Image 1 (cartoon, rainbow, N blue to C red):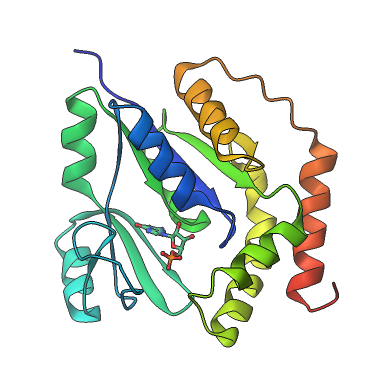
Image 2: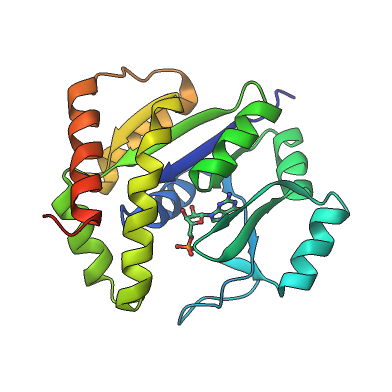
Length: 209
Ligand code: 5GP
């Protein structure tokens, strides 16, 4: 049986990655999402083992020592990491495995797994991003500001991704990702649009927009 593909999906906090990935895996039976381990506290409605495996720092560090993670990174004060076994098992079964992870982890996976495809989801505009992050109401203001700061730092690394898609409508964004998986995607997004979003994110994370 042909092995599945490893697909890395990243995007600024608030861009709607979670919704896009959920929709992709609901629509296509051959796409499965890897459940990460994290030391952050569950948000309301989040279920252990479904949204994340919630761990203490000690438990997480043990997973690192025992080499149970494909990659891990720290993000705004917490550890996040991808358990190895699920990824390997599903790729062997022919499923495409989606990793919804931040930029540092994405680069580590690209180093380890040469044929992984990395996709960065961009907002239609930086204003749309800020509105979503604030409107979601799941984070306190200081956490939002930390996440915006982090988004600004991440802009310097997003040039390393293989593909860029815009989350204007969820259906189109899901279709673009499916096309990437199938090798049918036309990367038509201009570099100038990508640069513009990068600059805007930097400005508003400094409170200048
Ligand atoms: P959140 O706290 O909003 O669920 O996630 C924060 C960030 O951590 C997001 O950018 C998310 O994609 C990323 N993330 C989630 N799981 C992992 C993981 O296993 N590894 C890495 N490197 N990042 C992750």
